[in-house]
Image 1 (cartoon, rainbow, N blue to C red):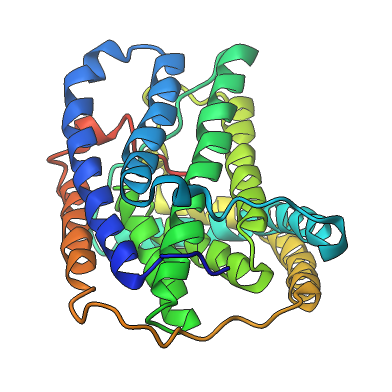
Image 2: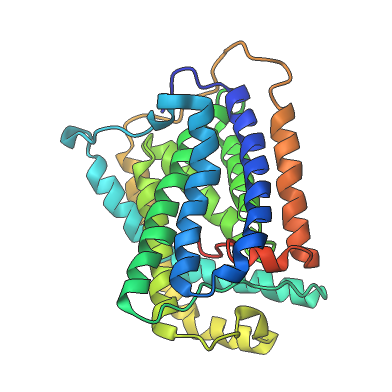
Amino acid sequence: MRARNLTAGTGSLLVFLWAGALLLMQLFTLLITPYLDKAWLKYAWMGLHEILFLLGPLFLLRGKQALAPIHKIEKKTGEWPTIFLSALLAGCLYPLIMILQNFWQILLETLGIRVPVTPLQETKNVWEFLLAFVSVACIAGITEELCFRGTLLPAMTKKLRVIPSILLTASVFAMMHGSFSALFYTFLIGCLLGWLTIYSQSIYPAMAYHILNNTIALVLNHVSSPKPGRGLEELSVHQRLDAIKTILPIAIFLFCVGLLLFYWIRSRRETRPEPPDKQKDNQRWWIPLVAGSMILGLLVIADLIGSFTGGMACISILFV
């Protein structure tokens, strides 16, 4: 999945630009939050937010090469079955990842850290649900995979080995959501998506996983119809443990199915992960990466201490 003219320095600079764009979007959101008084307005803003702060810097820096990861799927490559298996994998691993996310919340509460959780907006009708699907599932799934697994991940593999590149990309992906409560969840998802991209040498399996994962979250949110003002932060430790006990048998069964899907996806790959390129690059290529990561880290810490909670409530996407 090598892209022309894509260097580690380019990926590093992208992180810095994304961090700056996200900071501006956060400040702008603080201004328009009073006008986002309906669910469909908030979901529309989520989709626009993804396009502006992610695709904007990417096209500014890469131009037409930003679309390089998008390619025509050839039948002879057997890519469609891998995409289908990746979507199934999202459904199989979703309960387990939700259990791990609940353990993360329990750990935080045990340590005395009370982090506000931003639930998805309630969709009251089919039209709001469809808008949420387009915004949270499709737009987020496509744009984030194009940016993170389609551009940043291969850029990092120019200088780093596969596993460090996946972990680094997943860390930036997690911090980019700006939510401390969802940090662990989004990091796990980022690692899975990076693995799918590396072993399939395509971003389409990661897109399929991402879109279905977010769709499941939207469907559960729509069916459960939570009461206004009630979020996950109101659940006690005992309520979380009871919920975990309830879904644990299903999660274990689906996890076993997921292991089989992992095996099938891995066995279908035709090429091994490529080693880092022996390329000449600026020795200080990592400086924008560190600077951008520091900005993202500060936004996550701001969410933790609550200083940006009001503004981030509209754009922190827990299940993306």
